[in-house]
Image (cartoon, rainbow, N blue to C red; front, side, top):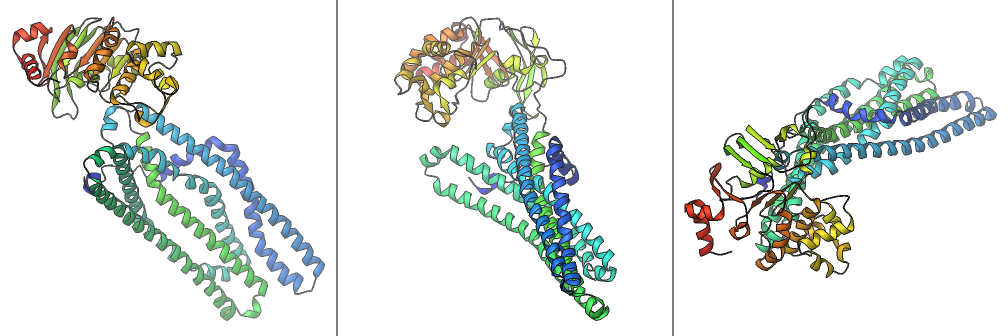
Length: 592
């Protein structure tokens, strides 16, 4: 495993910065009342902040110069009350915007998660789980400051900048032009910096995603890593990914920080120009002390919002890549989805037909080619053949996890493409080699097969597959809480729970994909009666390498080279002395 295994394989199609920002900020429209209240509060706060330099100028030039203490105290009282109200308003504004932003993040995360649930297997086949987690958690979290500061920073600071410039020009155009003479330099600096910054942050987001994907995979496969003593190799790979992540971050931050330096320079240059023009050109006798102080304060009020706006701009550049990554998944359309005119699948009887089906995963090599067969309701069909022959592909097409390129898959005469996915899959029971168990109680895991199942139905299903006895031996029985992926249970016990989960769903079509591969021979004998009960009265497809498990199948399909090479009962296939016969003889020599 090397760092190169985690190269940036994600191709994000940029939809345009303004379009992405517009889409992100559109979520604010659902909170119009809150935003309106915040804007009113901010308007008051901006007005007070703009009046403060005028209060200082008036206090110095009118009241202090004239020794008018009553007038000065009255002015101080008014300013004090207004500023206390401004502080209170800022606290309320922060509370309201935090509530709005958190609600929006919940909405975006729910929308993203819900959409991901609708995507087909091909989406998940092409992306590591860690990278998907990075979108749902990290990328969405990074949008909070952008949403909040759009209202609390961008709008008031923009208004402040414009208002300060206007006030300065009205009071003294010459001093105003001197104070703002560095604006052209600022504009050029911002243009140059933004040209490079966005790309750098996109790279950083990809490196973060790569690191997250590796850590997730590493933790999931920790038993394999320790079994093969590969800790040093994985540590080396991790170190390489961390170093790439660090370099990408430093590169992006350096670009952003240069904007702050440019603003500091413009601020200082403006202050120097103010005093130079005021003292040496206009003459100190023509500009009052209060005016100098007011203009100095206004310069700070002009460039401080510019600094805030630049920080907000940095946030946008930093997190725009995150927004693009989130919306990229939201805009990903499921290749397997309901069409406009789908119908609900009625209760399945189990008549399954393949009509000249051709299928390829990558549009280059056909896994199945011109496959046709007809399965009667209630038949048990065993699928055998070498690894990669297409056995699992056949059952995946029946469940419509993938769509065929040519031909048609029908159940009870209904083309699976023309019935709703939910009504189809809700009537199918699917068991695989990897019988995933969720964190929660044993009862909840079995109930996952039928969410409204009663406790009696759950216990009956467990008894049918001989899982009841080992469950009752646990300290809390059916209320025993399982850790992630059923940690603490044996592979066979996990398999039995998966059997019970399938049993309780009472499916119309049953698919067992190597479902008994992890069960030892003694356990297999225990569940054989349960399996037969599960198969009885429903169409079933059983994929098995262990031929002893399919002796009672109605028909056996030998799948190889993209098609069904042999078909028949056990005795018929043995009599042919073909592919099945060779498999049978090999297992007689090398028994399981």
